[in-house]
Figure 1 (cartoon, rainbow, N blue to C red):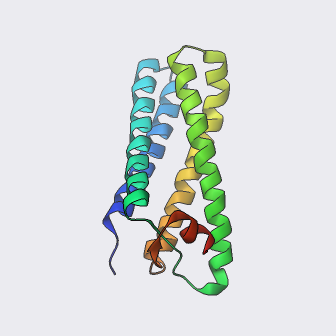
Figure 2 (figure 1 turned 180 degrees about the vertical axis):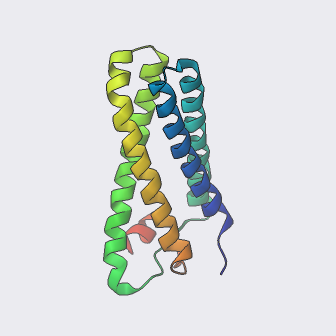
Length: 153
């Protein structure tokens, strides 16, 4: 079995991001504010590294379509769309949460932080599931443009 390097690396960074978010959440519960700030910035950097690798691969190589059985392709596609929605929502919430924390708008930050964290955890979990479905459980399909990979057009 051959596991592709770039998707493996990018998935690793999204997992590292989720782990550091969990650590940051624990730190703030312990009132370790400075450690929390550094950890959450590290989580954001891990997420940014993921995005740079993912976007670069998408632009220069393309995306891999689902190569599993045809009878479950619709379920994979619905799951992928759910993951993309979560990832987009998590990224937007993440940016807003970082900005509100950085600007000391703590009322908003404290309300948004836990929601953002949970969305990000689900983003990471579903991202790993997409990775497993594309490269581990089934042999990836053709590598092609994003629209063709997602919608099969």
